[in-house]
Image (cartoon, rainbow, N blue to C red; front, side, top):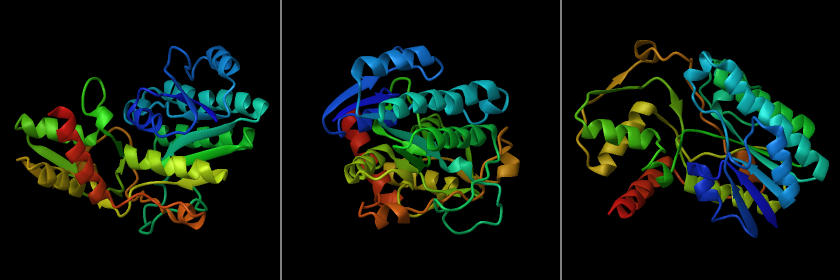
Length: 288
């Protein structure tokens, strides 16, 4: 199997590339920019992959509110171009989406399934949902994976970052931290997500799948666990979404169900607390 991975330099791409079987070709923006269809076409024509994995995305949730064109260019129009090329070659396209396609139902308290109707509440969420629709409509051999709150060791240094690293950095600076306690989701370790995606591809199944760590928490609970497991002192207190005042709306409840994954015989990722402990252990080894 030959696989081209877009966004290979990101957290998820760095964890996926060494786990994918066969000939894996990492592709950065210089070779596969979602806003340049000509470049995408040239890269796919050159390598003729069996599978294309799209880890690239515009992930600036708040910034997207003032840059909708940029968000839709990368998250919707780009995947449309990619889906067209993959459909023409009968190539499998793996495309990553987000829990932020939900949120309109403010009364939700049970995990979202793939059969539930999405309803985004932000430009970012709408752009990602549009990308899903293009991929599903254009490319028959598609695998769309919705996930949530990614963090991986490749984001613990250099230009990369994630929520875990942000919390530890701010705590190290002695700054007071006010983290929202009224948004529930499931932060997910990229290493675990990568392993589940590889197992999913091995089944040969196509369609829409939710893949996150197990369980759920608020962002405040997640931050508290980070400091507990890292043995870090922090001035942490809960706050509300309204008081925090982010530009973009977030879902109050965006926990995703992994049941469809289990139903096809693929083990879902471990619980979020176990994944976080493992992440922090690996982070310590990487930085020692």
